[in-house]
Image (cartoon, rainbow, N blue to C red):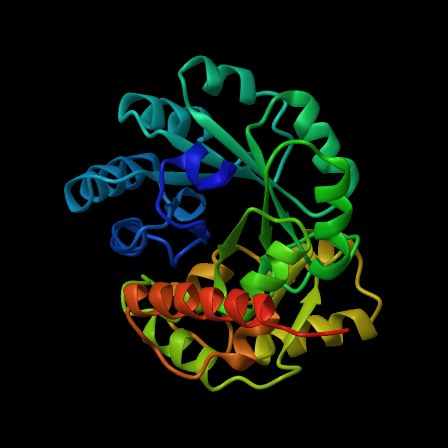
Length: 315
């Protein structure tokens, strides 16, 4: 047991990221039932849908699970009301400052974890009283930090200088990567991309197949003028690059992005015009598996690597 397993009351410190359009109750409950922490992604849910998802997750597992709450999204007040009403024990916050809501949520005995992409923001989160942080390198899929700091650089800087527990994220989809994150001082890992390509993920099968068929270099971090996002290259991505060549301004980029791009790609399966948010590690994912299979493979490989390192004889 370490600080993360104790904090969340879980068996093993794997946290499934609460990704938009991919992380519903089926995935979250499966990961929790495997011994980790499943997270429902509220960022793509209307309040009534979130309420239903939480209730279904409670019926599917008696173990702890959480909700990921992007703080800049609409209906934040209603989402928080639903989380409190349903007595969700753990909330991961992202995409905004935790200052406004941390004390309020903690007053309802909710454990708060915030996702950061820089040391400076990690320090601010610690000062605001969050219980733990997710240090996410820019290898990660979806919305990301402008600093473009890799996990190998970000994690040790935070774990060396921050006192609260750190969960590593970005480029982690194996026991080897988990062991590396622990060597850098992390006490848990948050895994997103690997669980997108799971049977329980609510992502469209077209998107899952695009992930397992992707190669190194098929993702890119773009739209930094708006909110940086890592996505699979497709026709929509090509349109973004053409807009840059034409020196499009922010309003023009916003117009190109429009609304519902992520839903179109990730949930509805439009691989041409949709926004396909996924991490660099997608190039190593080659099969759709159940969440429990993925969990056990990572866990077993992690222990194998630790054993190999313990037996390493270097003089």
